View 1 (cartoon, rainbow, N blue to C red):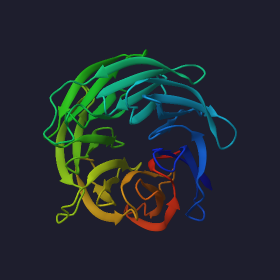
View 2: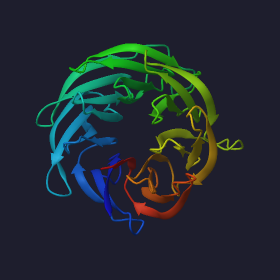
View 3: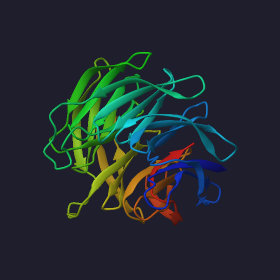
View 4: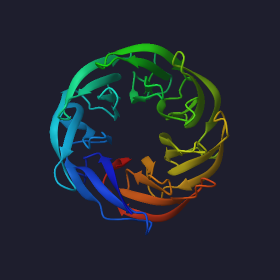
Length: 343
């Protein structure tokens, strides 16, 4: 079976946009990368059920989000982009029920919602700017929104690295946001991304700045989070630079994965039956430098990790019984790759 993977990239050196690569699950092998859509700085990508592609985009001195439609079997063409002066978003997510696209703007500390129109194009719906007090770390000079995606009960959850907060918003059908709760993390955590357990009662927050996973109980009644556990993604004796990056959970909720940029590894955690505790069981090299993102394939037999600075992908075979990873392929060329998205 061949599975298609879209790769979001920077375009500062060798990349020209969004790339596509195939995973041959029968052979356990990644095939050659191909350019799927040209564009500047499409660092994060996602797709709608209709088959439209959405990404972060830079257009000259402006940045924002872009919509693409299929143009043949292996390529996409631009429908439109919603941009404004300044840095682009760093994360995008589709809301199928409301036909919205959410965007996180790291540099400007803003949350965006866009309406997805009938032809797949985008139209700005709302903007929220965070102005809360920031954390003590040197990278927390202002609000830095890093993640905007849905809770299991269809609220919007937002991670802000700069303010050390996780925000919960209600969203109306037109994309207007109303804040309903804030979780305040320990100072210097730097909330980056989170994932929910399939039981919908717990979430796992990755702190980029202190390299930790925080287990959060989620209260669907009021959209609040509360901490139940916090632990490091690194070995005790590691003292060099590291920045937490991506976090994923298996469909059965038994295993959690987090990537370390600096230590250049994926941390594997076993999750207990209720979801309120995790235990580190493996640290495995990404066979490259600066693994900003990774993803599990549809059967969860494989994991693909992207090393930004060394322009390579690494393929792992995943043991579904014990959650452990084994490297089976490395040095697969993928220029400036920072997002791995299985279509």
